[in-house]
Image (cartoon, rainbow, N blue to C red; front, side, top):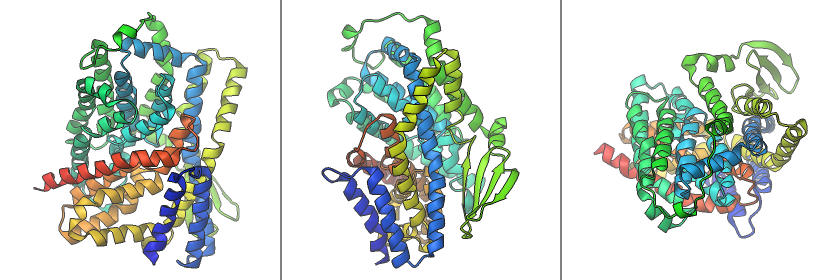
Length: 526
């Protein structure tokens, strides 16, 4: 019964969203959260105040994704208002008008690099609107971006899912390195198949077939350095792989290597001065530079932005509020239940780099105050419904995690493992995907299920590092069906009430990814 009641709200949620005339996420998710709240009280017997504390925690947690979405939408509006986007469209057309080239450069290599620097759903938030601006269908772009943003995710935000996600398991540095390498190998193989599946969701098979050489070269230009670097490092594979891949993909497209000539005859090249191109690209350059500088801890700025030394503390009754030197908002002991939450004002990629880059660009391009005000106003209006959807999603997740080892999420995970038994290697990535589906984060998935995966590996005699690599791969592929990411990419592409349809489309690539992971893991074991 505990398993049934743990799974039932999720099944109901998916049905509400994918059925004909599906319910929009900003209604379905809060309703599901209310159902879980009732079940936690009536069946699981958790404390009324503890559940309320987690609801408040969910509200605070919503600040992170919604401010990232706000920043991304604001940035993309600025790019349109300043004319940068129009110049970039023409520049990409001058490199090569072939749509496959544009999809691989922006949707694959560029997004790969941004994932390596930031994570937090930033790649789709930046890349998807550029592709929409190039004339691609917004709904198809949303699906494409979600599927593409999978291979680099285990090393996103300078490797956070790997070194931090498994940081609580008392693993040696060598074990973490082995997990990183196994993860990279599995992703490398998946990278030969998944991008093609993603392209199939946005363009025709004939178009893919005629340009398959370029597709493969673009994929390998990211995944080869990614995999090679993973042999010695677990922080920079995605960042370096994406940067190398972006440069090579642009070079290959410029030379027309591996691309069909079909689109050349339709292309009226418009000469753009180098100065104009560089100025149009400067906001993206600033954005990437700030992301890289603030994410590489060896440079020291990351530490400053995460300095949690208290400036002052303020007891407010319902919780203790604390502000740190880095403007970190700490909400401690909510309702006296020991529940804490935090918002890292300077580190979450919202104020820095998005808002800062927008303000610098407004000055650089001498944007009118009225246009700047309109950008902020329109952006605020656009994030209202996503805020409700994300609030419902994060409260749902918080409530399902109440109860420690007896929580609804842990019950699902443990029962999943018990049913699989000796065949666990074939199912390990899907547990990671469940974690990402709930939380919207490869890191949180690894934190939630890493301990279970480790124990299953020990009990069954499987390789611990390989099983944990499968967990990390699962958390990455789960991004395709993660509600938080779907809501975010729909918001920035202005796609409305299509979340259920998107889940139906992204489920198959996610499922295939898990099969690939199991096959590669089997080969690594042999």
